[in-house]
Image (cartoon, rainbow, N blue to C red; front, side, top):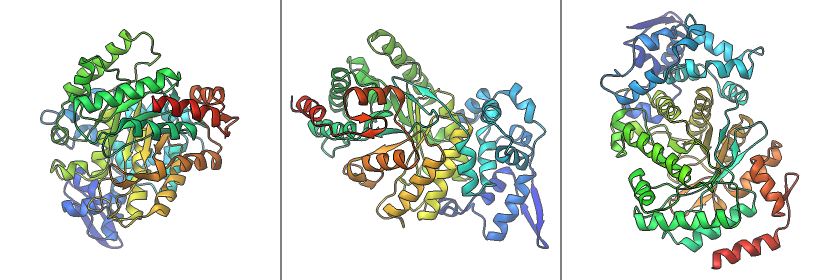
Length: 463
């Protein structure tokens, strides 16, 4: 179905819903690279105008990718709550925007709509919202997730300790993790990106993190962000796995480029749940998946099907929702300037990804980051960090100095976490804060001098 509208006396036409969504997207270098972006600000404004009048039912009637050809589309349609959708079946995209931003709209009313929304609907309404709108609307939504800690509650900001090391040196990884714990971080997860895709290496890292957590009875979870097949082979060898990780994309071809299938994710989830049950000493719950997404991944894999990168990001998040994850985060600036060129585009994408995730019901965090060849710097990252903190982001990354020495990109530090918690009156996850107070690391939300605790933790690293 074609769409058209007249703006300032000029007629604009859009070939189909996919073309309309692409032209209505805020400027992104990735969409321009794909040749699907609006050719002018006027065309973009016209596309937004036309999109506001599109009925939500249109996204069900005309899927962007056929479920017969794309497994992600099949999962998204199977996961859709048709009964809940009846309440909003007559709405347009513009009416959905008005509802989300109305002063009378309550968090409960938004929560009732989450399963009624296809990811493409969430992407469409996002294109009609300004940055302030995305912050305001997201701040109203709280999506709880539970493993050994509970994230997403009002007033809670979690942090993933990311103690990566370029040589996968286990004592160095533990030392960076201890530093994070002493700064009140780690309630989301202690998660390591391994430099080497090796079962022996990944197993060593997971065993070391597990010993740290169990020795000091830390209410958190660990993860090693290797390929899912490597993680499951570790599981076969008796290595404890708290969270099963993988990057996912918004099309079947994207996930195939990552070397995964949806069946593989489902099987992995079931195996980790079974392992949790067998490890009856743990208190980990049924949310055992950790997913990372990011705008541009499908285009970089030549698997975008001429769909804009924001809409594909929404589809990736919709796929994550089907697996009931504990953590999801957009690695927003990691993919590079070919897809998000500068500070303005990175900030916009971060707010978009976070809002869509929250709207779809996900426990959404964000890796506020940039690569050194992008037109961005630490000041721009801090701008996004503050905006997302105001928007109620579930968790951020915690990296020593904000400089990942293995992945070679810039992100957020332990000190950034302290600053955001202080600035917005936020606290760690309640179970984790209780542990911090018991270890005399924190008291009533404020960090304490922790000499004795530091000594015990460092002695464990030395062993």
